[in-house]
Length: 214
Image 1 (cartoon, rainbow, N blue to C red):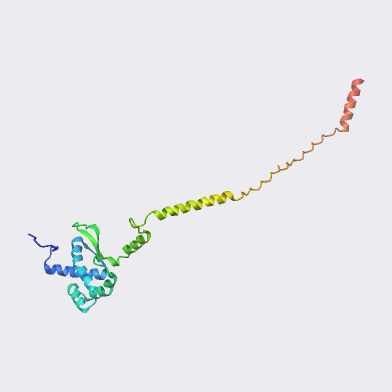
Image 2: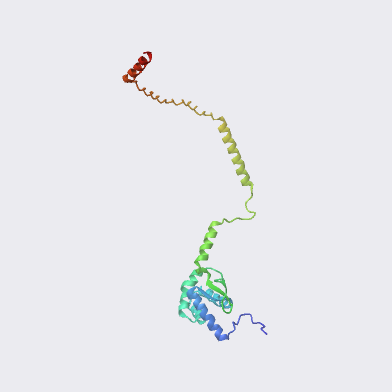
């Protein structure tokens, strides 16, 4: 029976489990994000977050305590020089688990575990959303000032209307009547002259008439 066994043994012996978590914690500190199974990520979250809290106090005693868990001097230096100043005054919750789905082969539930303060995408999105939203308070200010402002606007609009009514009305200048455009008449073409009869044809006609009389 598993009475009073609250943490996950991960199917390993005590020495194997400690070596696994120390190695994963050092990798997380150095790379700021690692991919693993959800069960190991939850165990690592419990293991590494107290070490980050310990690193906020940069003393020899703190460094020796953290080194006894990480067992990597380069990871200890990175934790105290880079990670701890970036964490600042954050009261816990230094890591984030992002699920990725199931692994092919054994269908293990996979995820990313990362340090919250080193994810630039999430930080940029939080700043943009915070800048766009305006904070409101419930039941804070009364609606009386709004009513006075509305009344003032009504009064000013009424004064503007009275001033517009009293002002002389300027008549628009009458448009000049348009004169009809003069029609342009094209000159008629002169008729072509008829061809004159020749004298020869007249002589022929005279001879024919004389022959008829004779």
